[in-house]
Image (cartoon, rainbow, N blue to C red; front, top):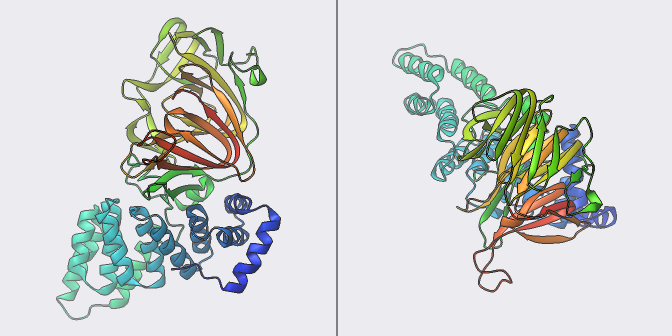
Length: 460
């Protein structure tokens, strides 16, 4: 199903966008406007982007979300339908389309999409809750009761029991049912932004995400768009990304690249004291892995291992590898780590936004905000990421040097997934798997990076 634009509009937009900076200019402009709450202007920017690349997942996702926020549900449904064709197999997209169809009163189509989401391994409890609402609207209270029981919604299950009892006796008031269901739809978030959980980064980019309803206002503030793309082998890919304004340049401290080397000051939380040596000053609270800890001076305590955060909520998955999880360190004193053959690299953020490979992340100050996610395709493990924002310091631990590669304009770079340390800037990643005729060995996982910013490459 094509987005609702006629030929004349498409031609006009194509001419406009070719002058105003091209596809990625329009895409990133739309994401920035959406984050600022300028939804109508954002939708126009996404429509301009789609005029240049009609099947681009990020643009379709942006158009679908912006249209929904404007209560223009049919274009939103059209965009989600097309997105499902472009990136098949995404359970969350079927959930999102089902929510939009509920708003349109298209109960049969909504039911089919929710059932498809369950087949694809989606959030069964949440989907059963939506199915219960559909059955309630139809007056199928027995089916609704079963669905609400499966969803764990005891309150709605009790109401369905009451409706079944009323149904057995004269005097049932159908309007009471409609009011009840409409209130539950609002409580479930159907009258707020549907969870754009994939194009969604999460294949689901966060199997680790807890089964809790999102606060609509908090969702809009974070404005995390999980964007899925089609990989080179035709499989859907996913990435958890945060739209936003251009990212200021971060600064880096490492011995191999004088261009970005900076000295540690007296206020620095982390100091690179020698090859493979890291000192942390605990005047500021930090989070770090304990592996390689050699010396502790003063009164320092470590918390239990931290758990990943997804969309502002703690999950039940450890942050970091199971053998080397991240802990919060508190107290006053110093701690010294020895990395052996590996090297530490220090990054200083000053209001920046940066995505880093969770595998090489070693430590960071608690002044930074962070979220977890991943880029993946099909059934592959993919690359687990941490998105940092704000002001503070980060330390990576890798084997060897870290190289910074800039991307400009419409340039596209392919990077081996096992070499990507992270990136900053407005960059859209897309994962694919090398086929038999690729320059890389068959089966190699690659990330196609497009946009403007800087890549950090090394041994992940």
